[in-house]
Image (cartoon, rainbow, N blue to C red; front, side):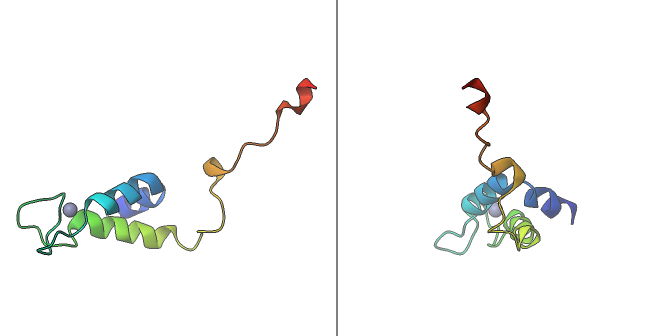
Length: 75
Ligand SMILES: [Zn+2]
């Protein structure tokens, strides 16, 4: 599933989709509105992406790793 693979690489977007496409009190998706039952298609894609991104909650992603102290050459 291409969309889930893409979302798995964008954890911020995935989390936003999962937060926005949450069920309301009647069991419908809040973001899709209308009569869309929850979980909606977008939420299911995000959930699939979450499974793709596991298991790596402990290993830091390359782009989220803290920058090395590279200012030491100035001293
Ligand atoms: Zn939705």
